[in-house]
Length: 248
Image (cartoon, rainbow, N blue to C red; front, side, top):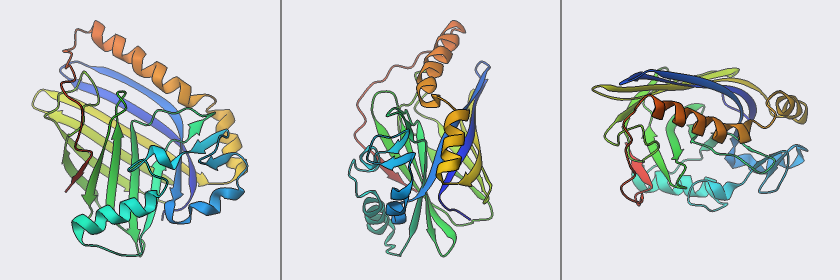
């Protein structure tokens, strides 16, 4: 079901309440098996912990240590008392020419072809992040709620719930994330087309999505200006995030 892929990824944001605002953009993502990360060394256009057209620095994830696989296994064993020979697939956008902003990366923790945990690693523009660990009980319908723990936008309150719906197939993945409470609703999602992770497909996606990483931050600030002009309520960040992990 999951393997090493390069993905053509469409992302959308749709605010429903208290005002309407919609935008979408196309990016490049990859899915990599952290347990077999060394197998990617033969790729010419994607490097691990080195500069390239595409690159992934493992110190940007988890506890900021290159031993990302070991860190996740340790956290799962500590909280859930599970110590299995898992495969962990990281869905993330790689750096393009050394730059990326990843609002969310997702880990799929798999044992015997079944997803047992999904981990959402969420970041904000203040350099903070939070990892939401979620135990999965039904692979046929992966839907669940998570309480919001990290300040991610001045236009979203903190006391919100996230509702996730995931459809995972070999050639495509759909992930829907709704944030809501009473009169505040934001719908987001991503639609991924998966291709084998090889140099030919990496080069094709590099040409198709040229400078996608640099465009993301520009688009975020452009949309923020549009939202301000709609007189949206601005929620100031009150404190520094200290709790970086939560479990459910």
